[in-house]
Length: 314
Ligand SMILES: [Zn+2]
Image (cartoon, rainbow, N blue to C red; front, side, top):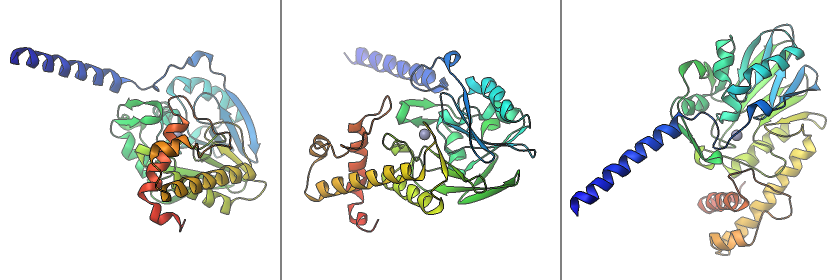
């Protein structure tokens, strides 16, 4: 009996090792994407800033004769197509790429673009996460460490400013928002702001297990609302170009949901009761594949339960 159970343990360990090897080797998301079918669309946003949309995070492009500055670079499989589309905006070389956060649909092109001469810039926590194997719960996938050549070579803690093509480009950190390494990129002269995945029209998505936080997303939105004007264009991580009022609406809905959950916690409701009460109802929230309203509600509940004494001061 003892020998048999030892055999079972050995087989189980081997199976685990093989599984980990297969999963860690994977560089794509936890679901299939047909990259050949992806359509790449470019759009002028305002002033010197353009947007390139495809399958991953929206790319911001600052164009001009000093060379290009990009915000995010999507999936490595799309690099050639992206390069062709970006060349139609401007033939100048791509000099800088700023990663809004570490998620692979925003950073997988780093290696290719860096090899072609771009300097990758990100918050210091993006470099920390990408330097080691990392897990993304939002796509249920373990990713291998990025090679050194794909890591940000310039990192910052609070902010960094670029002066390029007559534009002042302010890059600032939003602590514990969508992840723990978020950067927001504000093109002051063109009046465009790239907010990364902090704003999403159909409800907030954040990486709870990589330093993301519901309250941090609200704080980040507040800091953007304080800075921008009524006519400022917002490039979100995914989806259409948004306005200040779109952001205000999303922020207000999150605050209302927070009030509902805080109230339920104060009444001593359990997680199951809070999920059943559907506190996110009424705002048209829809979660992407592999996430759910129940999961997001659970994360909100856990965070607010842990910090309910601080909430009154938010
Ligand atoms: Zn993301």
